[in-house]
Length: 139
Image (cartoon, rainbow, N blue to C red; front, side):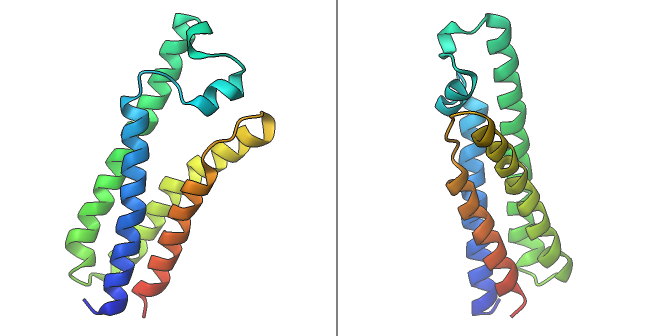
């Protein structure tokens, strides 16, 4: 790999590491996030057990999905991308933009409709890294 391809690899990897951290945070959390509490206007302990169960199930399924797509992206980076297989130059950023873009959209809806402050900037950083990686991979 040349310098631009290595830089693209690094950008993608940084974005994926951030996604894995977020995914495991959701997957392993024993309660909803602080911004979730602000959005629903109640503390975790004030919620009915059935609602707690539903929220945790949703968080864990989202977290698991994020982790699994992130690990698939790592595999694509380590094998086909490093080998110069052109298809991976397209599929990796597509997966990454979907992986991070959908949560950003959801967070923007939550921010617009509630007083919550979800971590949109953190996810936006991942999008910027993926776009930079996409551009660098074609130099």
